Image 1 (cartoon, rainbow, N blue to C red):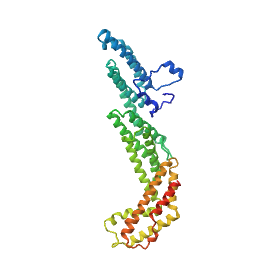
Image 2 (image 1 turned 90 degrees about the vertical axis):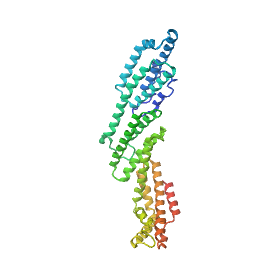
Image 3 (image 1 turned 30 degrees about the vertical axis):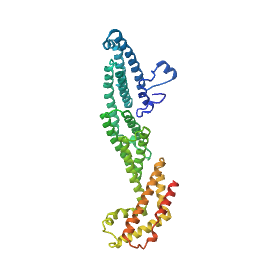
Image 4 (image 1 turned 60 degrees about the vertical axis):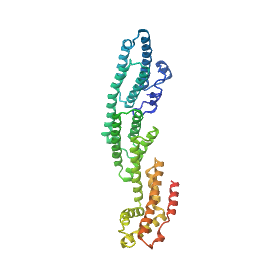
Length: 391
């Protein structure tokens, strides 16, 4: 527990305060803390005890140097039992600790405390700090690897979830990885960097595995989007906008949004026929295989049919209403992302229809007999704007 908050193994929260003001933080006075009902996570207690020892050793070191002309050997003799007792106390905690965030905090606190003593020119506790690192690092790796193994070998029954909302394990991963990245910002630890890459890879596999349970392609995509979204929101809270993990999940989110836009547009018959016609005939039109002087009658009939069907369906309002209804149904708990999808779908539909007019009709027909059946692009934009505003 820490600062009247429940101890959370997968989140950093207020525990980051243990790394702030390491040199000037007030020590914990046990009886006063007990009277006030204050409770602290282990890293605050460790910092307080070690700081007290450091300050006492510094005073004793300076005294021995001033009066006896030597200080290191005398300080070792004076503080040997105390240092040994502290090592045993810390070791007893570390041996049963499964809090990897707490362990990494202890590693960073040790680094800062060692730096303070180095700046003071008091080397008497160098061995103690080295012994702390020899305790903390192996245990951190063991606990981190255990968390990694839980993602590598997930319990499918426990993870099963029939909703499209973000899975609890995704938020847990986001908080956990964000905490590790935050605590590693100013440190070049290749082992942690590699571990985070592996953790990210395994989490991506778990999200894909959970998404596969949702049947329809659109539902799978929405599940992924919602989970990527919650990861990115946690990273944003931690200010990790330029981290490697943030870039990865931002790219994954964008990819799924692009796929979902096409999936939704192609779910309507009129839209899908127009989109398919534009995509399939792009290369033949560009290379001149299809044009006003080489216009297959079957192709001409298909273009006319698509133009008329699209306009008819648009005027009925069925297609665009279907897309809006689908988006509302899919993004019941993520309205902002739903609006984003609807805007993207509108822009994509406008682009496909522009290509239909400019790249298919205008380039292949000198005087199309179905010109009156073509929609005005501005009308299309206005209608879609109204749909988005009413979302």
